Length: 293
Ligand SMILES: Nc1ncnc2c1ncn2[C@@H]1O[C@H](COP(=O)(O)OP(=O)(O)OP(=O)(O)O)[C@@H](O)[C@H]1O
Ligand SMILES: Nc1nc2c(ncn2[C@@H]2O[C@H](COP(=O)(O)O)[C@@H](O)[C@H]2O)c(=O)[nH]1
Image (cartoon, rainbow, N blue to C red; front, side, top):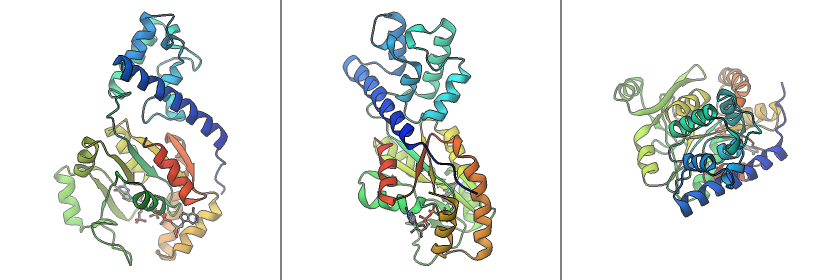
């Protein structure tokens, strides 16, 4: 099995367009106190304005958490052509778009909106390594510490790597509603993201990074649609296997189980807003950090 190449050039063009759109919304908000919905309303009421000339896709690129794949899905659902400009929308299209913006991105353009980034990807692709780089090099980012029922590996520290809990405690946390999301991963142990530290960090204006599996990523997208979902890809399948076996922390049987999950996870990569190839840890980590800005 090979992992499809990612069109990095196209990715960077999209990133530039997204930055330009965010800057336009930010300008509209800071100078004229206008949100993304406000930009849409001005486009409707002022056909000669700059806003009227903006494409719907450009406006959506300015919304935190919306990458190329999700934008395509959104405009298809709203029955809007990708080339449509805000000023050229029909009444129904405008109403549908406004309703979408109000529901999905009420804080878009708000300077204080914090970034919640979810980092997922197959086993041993390097999620932990990339997250550790960010923790050690980027201040002001909360790296969520998950609870898990799996046993600690040598060197893992309770409360830092994970909160290592037994089944009874994990059940209690579920019952008490303490998790933002939780899942059984690799058909073996349970893992969950404690909700309280995330709410606190976001309220304090910090960025938050979750390193979780794709079942968890889907739950976060439902609960917090503004989250940015990133899928970390290996340079190739062979390299992924090499990293897993080279890490040497799982038995051969557990490695088989994890690689089976990895095939399923790789097939779901298009559900994510951003794809980042982990060729080099620092480069991948910097790409993730860029999404928190
Ligand atoms: N860019 C890279 N180049 C080479 N080796 C890497 C790279 N990134 C990570 N690794 C190595 O790959 C192995 C797996 O990395 P890591 O444990 O961070 O993966 P993970 O995605 O968190 O895995 P899991 O989901 O199984 O917990 C480690 O030995 C790590 O040092
Ligand atoms: N849904 C969740 N998945 C999580 C969480 N914390 C970690 N994970 C994922 O589990 C696997 C295995 O991790 P490992 O440490 O045993 O190698 C990996 O994909 C993690 O991303 C969580 O809170 N929720």
